[in-house]
Length: 183
Image (cartoon, rainbow, N blue to C red; front, side):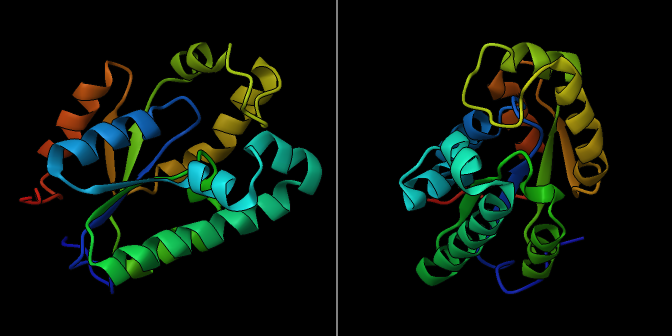
């Protein structure tokens, strides 16, 4: 089914997945390969707040972070429309699990690609990373993964992201949902 909505003709695609699934890495590679603009939602939030995400969680709380996240998503979509730029957006790990965001992306006609990865691989990738505010220990990590899984499963497209990032990019390209931009 072709994308419908105000941004469908502009081509915006969003990457979703749990922390460590490769959204930023794959998103950058994909955007570079097809000549699209790349937006990392977490980086946008940090730039706008002047704080890193763990500090936002610590000082302002998760509810405020989620509001900032939705505003950043709306802003990224709006800029894509204003500038008429095809854009790959790497969502934060919890962005698609927020009902308002999933509905917004659906209304805008943005295809969402879930970067699937087994929890054991995600855990291994995130174990030594210190900037993930919702990663406290293995049990809470796996519980959060299970909590978000039903939301990720609602994404319109799925690719495996356990191998090297280039393989995930090739899988996304094989979906046939993107057009290369000639520069």
